[in-house]
Length: 533
Image (cartoon, rainbow, N blue to C red):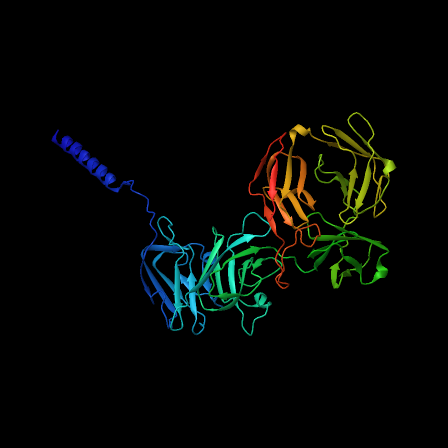
């Protein structure tokens, strides 16, 4: 009996001890740590002069780690070889920087870590920590500031590099393609303003780049750029405004690819209204056509007869531009046959259009019938855009209608002599009560023409008009949704927006947005007044 009682008592004691241990280790539910790490000491000291060290150590009060260091760290002036920085992929109470490059004499260096230094537990950043030192006897202390905007878009890009190039006896405008700047800062992911500090007095070119390669050099094929037109002098109290834009590339051609039995695709860049393409040996073909793929920087070169050889050399010319391309000809490709399809979205405000997968060369309106839902024939005119390969039908379009377009055999003939069989397409329009209108009144304008555009939230243009004076311009039959009004000052009167040009020192055309996003509803007129400057 005593043995049984002792065993039972021992079991209770062990259970109580286990409960107490469990309580001792349970979470207390205390406040979340929101404090950033603190620097206890730096060696050498921050803002040191006569700097000669290769190693820098910064000690924190808690374990830290590095987050997106490659995106966040900006070194000014840039170093050819980036320093070795630890911890990388781990944690430590010390941030160590090993300088592997030769430093310039009498130069102030800034290592801006952005928000890359965070504590290990909660990820609280040490915001915009800068380590500054000078290889000379003093720290440069001048500064400039400004803002970044996008010339065409509502919002500016993030992670924009703002740069200063010193204007001295060696300076030329081409330097931004070949050399890194004297000073650089980055707007990081949330700012459209910038401040460049620790500058020395001098004359500079101020510019900004949104880069693809992050090499601090301008690549006009992929980078956005913005710049101040005239050199700036430091010190200055001026607040600078830089407008970013995507420059137009110089005209050029990319590789050629044989993708159909007698069809070659040619990649292009730059603004090309047309491009003359022909074989170097002109005796190889009897006839050719060139079309452009929709929304792609690609031309298609169609030719006949079929060429029986391994490769083909093409010459391409556009104005003073000339280049040659060689493409390997494949043997197992099919001949393209004529297929007709609808193009775009037919509505009360957009025309009825057809396209084809081969070049359209001829049409016969007598072999086309267009009737409404009551079988009433509709008078129409057709227009062929040979480059885009689009047929546009113009007629009196009515709301709440259904149109039947019937193409009889032979109505359309393509480049290879193929014709359509009987094809029927049905197109419908909506009731005006399902749609909305945006009447826009321009006031106060003195600089015309301007281009008024209605864009969706993603800035896709849905309607556009050229305005040569103040007054009302009506945009009708728009789908319900959110829209912007954008006004482009068309200073060269070419009917489109033109970006700037660095080498020509030309700023982009001015673009302004109506300040509010328009929530257009069905059966509404959203009346707006835009005051032009």
